[in-house]
Length: 171
Image 1 (cartoon, rainbow, N blue to C red):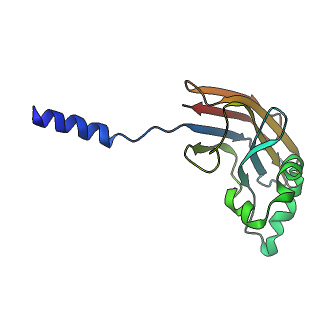
Image 2 (cartoon, helix red, strand yellow):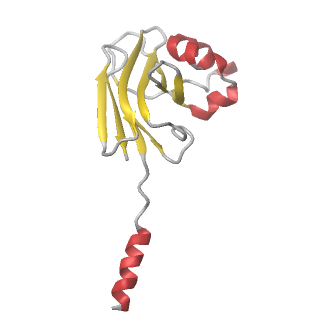
Image 3 (tube, rainbow, N blue to C red):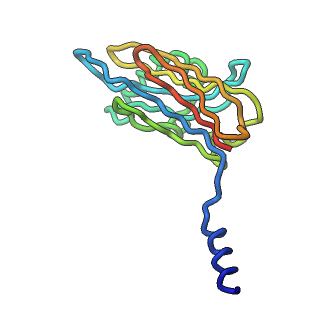
Protein backbone atom coordinates (compact mmCIF):
# COMPACT_ATOMS: atom_id res chain seq x y z
CA UNK A 1 0.00 0.00 0.00
CA UNK A 2 2.79 2.39 0.88
CA UNK A 3 4.49 1.80 -2.49
CA UNK A 4 1.30 2.52 -4.45
CA UNK A 5 0.70 5.76 -2.53
CA UNK A 6 4.27 6.89 -3.14
CA UNK A 7 4.03 6.12 -6.84
CA UNK A 8 0.76 8.06 -7.12
CA UNK A 9 2.19 11.11 -5.37
CA UNK A 10 5.30 10.90 -7.51
CA UNK A 11 3.15 10.81 -10.64
CA UNK A 12 1.22 13.89 -9.55
CA UNK A 13 4.35 15.80 -8.63
CA UNK A 14 6.12 14.85 -11.85
CA UNK A 15 3.25 16.13 -14.04
CA UNK A 16 4.08 19.61 -15.33
CA UNK A 17 1.67 22.35 -14.36
CA UNK A 18 -0.56 23.33 -17.25
CA UNK A 19 -0.55 27.04 -17.84
CA UNK A 20 -2.85 29.27 -19.78
CA UNK A 21 -1.37 30.11 -23.11
CA UNK A 22 -1.86 32.04 -26.29
CA UNK A 23 -0.51 30.13 -29.28
CA UNK A 24 -0.07 32.08 -32.49
CA UNK A 25 0.66 30.50 -35.86
CA UNK A 26 1.53 32.71 -38.82
CA UNK A 27 1.81 31.24 -42.30
CA UNK A 28 4.28 33.14 -44.42
CA UNK A 29 3.66 32.36 -48.09
CA UNK A 30 6.50 31.66 -50.46
CA UNK A 31 6.25 34.23 -53.22
CA UNK A 32 7.57 33.76 -56.73
CA UNK A 33 9.08 37.20 -57.24
CA UNK A 34 12.36 38.33 -58.77
CA UNK A 35 13.77 39.83 -55.55
CA UNK A 36 12.47 38.13 -52.41
CA UNK A 37 13.14 39.46 -48.93
CA UNK A 38 11.74 37.84 -45.80
CA UNK A 39 8.98 39.99 -44.35
CA UNK A 40 9.23 42.08 -41.23
CA UNK A 41 6.37 41.01 -38.94
CA UNK A 42 4.81 42.72 -35.94
CA UNK A 43 2.39 40.85 -33.65
CA UNK A 44 0.36 42.62 -30.97
CA UNK A 45 -2.95 42.58 -29.08
CA UNK A 46 -5.57 45.31 -29.23
CA UNK A 47 -8.53 46.00 -26.96
CA UNK A 48 -11.99 46.63 -28.47
CA UNK A 49 -11.26 50.39 -28.49
CA UNK A 50 -8.16 49.70 -30.67
CA UNK A 51 -5.72 50.60 -27.89
CA UNK A 52 -2.66 48.37 -27.59
CA UNK A 53 -2.91 45.71 -24.87
CA UNK A 54 0.42 43.95 -25.52
CA UNK A 55 3.30 44.03 -27.96
CA UNK A 56 3.98 40.34 -28.47
CA UNK A 57 6.66 39.91 -31.13
CA UNK A 58 8.67 41.70 -33.78
CA UNK A 59 10.58 39.79 -36.45
CA UNK A 60 13.08 41.93 -38.34
CA UNK A 61 16.65 41.94 -39.63
CA UNK A 62 18.45 43.38 -36.61
CA UNK A 63 21.90 42.23 -37.76
CA UNK A 64 22.22 44.72 -40.61
CA UNK A 65 25.25 47.00 -40.42
CA UNK A 66 24.77 50.25 -38.59
CA UNK A 67 21.31 49.26 -37.38
CA UNK A 68 20.00 49.73 -40.89
CA UNK A 69 17.33 47.08 -40.29
CA UNK A 70 15.48 49.42 -37.95
CA UNK A 71 14.82 51.91 -40.75
CA UNK A 72 12.47 49.42 -42.40
CA UNK A 73 10.36 49.02 -39.24
CA UNK A 74 8.43 52.11 -40.33
CA UNK A 75 7.12 50.12 -43.31
CA UNK A 76 4.88 48.26 -40.86
CA UNK A 77 2.73 51.35 -40.68
CA UNK A 78 0.16 50.30 -38.11
CA UNK A 79 2.71 48.68 -35.82
CA UNK A 80 4.94 51.76 -36.14
CA UNK A 81 2.17 54.26 -35.38
CA UNK A 82 0.68 52.34 -32.48
CA UNK A 83 3.81 50.88 -30.88
CA UNK A 84 7.14 51.25 -32.66
CA UNK A 85 7.82 54.97 -32.71
CA UNK A 86 7.47 55.19 -28.91
CA UNK A 87 9.75 52.24 -28.09
CA UNK A 88 13.36 52.52 -27.00
CA UNK A 89 15.92 50.21 -28.64
CA UNK A 90 15.97 48.12 -25.44
CA UNK A 91 12.19 47.68 -25.57
CA UNK A 92 12.41 46.62 -29.22
CA UNK A 93 15.12 44.09 -28.33
CA UNK A 94 12.83 42.65 -25.66
CA UNK A 95 10.31 41.34 -28.18
CA UNK A 96 12.36 41.02 -31.36
CA UNK A 97 13.69 38.06 -33.23
CA UNK A 98 15.04 37.35 -36.69
CA UNK A 99 12.87 37.37 -39.78
CA UNK A 100 11.24 34.04 -40.52
CA UNK A 101 11.37 31.95 -43.68
CA UNK A 102 8.25 31.10 -45.66
CA UNK A 103 6.20 28.39 -44.00
CA UNK A 104 4.24 27.98 -40.78
CA UNK A 105 5.76 29.88 -37.84
CA UNK A 106 4.50 29.35 -34.28
CA UNK A 107 5.04 31.37 -31.13
CA UNK A 108 3.57 30.54 -27.72
CA UNK A 109 2.97 33.02 -24.91
CA UNK A 110 2.30 31.36 -21.55
CA UNK A 111 0.96 32.67 -18.27
CA UNK A 112 2.87 33.51 -16.22
CA UNK A 113 4.89 35.44 -18.72
CA UNK A 114 5.53 39.06 -19.44
CA UNK A 115 3.80 39.14 -22.83
CA UNK A 116 0.33 38.22 -21.62
CA UNK A 117 0.64 38.85 -17.88
CA UNK A 118 -1.95 41.27 -16.64
CA UNK A 119 -4.41 40.80 -19.47
CA UNK A 120 -7.83 41.48 -18.04
CA UNK A 121 -10.69 39.17 -18.91
CA UNK A 122 -12.36 40.34 -22.07
CA UNK A 123 -12.28 40.58 -25.81
CA UNK A 124 -9.10 41.23 -27.78
CA UNK A 125 -7.90 41.29 -31.35
CA UNK A 126 -4.64 39.64 -32.38
CA UNK A 127 -3.07 41.84 -35.05
CA UNK A 128 -0.33 40.58 -37.37
CA UNK A 129 1.28 43.01 -39.80
CA UNK A 130 3.87 42.06 -42.41
CA UNK A 131 5.90 44.33 -44.67
CA UNK A 132 8.51 43.25 -47.15
CA UNK A 133 11.32 45.25 -48.76
CA UNK A 134 10.51 45.60 -52.47
CA UNK A 135 7.19 43.99 -51.64
CA UNK A 136 3.83 44.69 -50.15
CA UNK A 137 2.31 45.20 -46.74
CA UNK A 138 -0.64 43.42 -45.14
CA UNK A 139 -2.50 43.32 -41.83
CA UNK A 140 -4.58 40.39 -40.53
CA UNK A 141 -6.86 40.70 -37.48
CA UNK A 142 -8.18 37.78 -35.44
CA UNK A 143 -10.66 38.49 -32.60
CA UNK A 144 -10.70 36.25 -29.53
CA UNK A 145 -11.71 36.25 -25.84
CA UNK A 146 -9.31 35.94 -22.90
CA UNK A 147 -9.20 33.72 -20.94
CA UNK A 148 -10.96 30.72 -22.44
CA UNK A 149 -12.89 28.11 -20.47
CA UNK A 150 -11.81 25.50 -23.01
CA UNK A 151 -9.23 25.53 -25.78
CA UNK A 152 -10.48 27.88 -28.47
CA UNK A 153 -9.05 28.48 -31.92
CA UNK A 154 -9.79 31.42 -34.21
CA UNK A 155 -8.23 32.28 -37.54
CA UNK A 156 -8.18 34.63 -40.51
CA UNK A 157 -6.23 34.74 -43.73
CA UNK A 158 -4.28 37.33 -45.64
CA UNK A 159 -4.24 37.67 -49.40
CA UNK A 160 -0.56 38.12 -50.36
CA UNK A 161 2.06 38.85 -47.72
CA UNK A 162 0.42 36.73 -45.01
CA UNK A 163 -1.29 33.37 -45.20
CA UNK A 164 -3.46 31.93 -42.47
CA UNK A 165 -3.09 33.42 -38.99
CA UNK A 166 -4.36 31.25 -36.13
CA UNK A 167 -4.67 32.03 -32.45
CA UNK A 168 -5.41 29.27 -29.94
CA UNK A 169 -6.28 30.23 -26.37
CA UNK A 170 -5.77 27.44 -23.83
CA UNK A 171 -7.12 27.69 -20.28
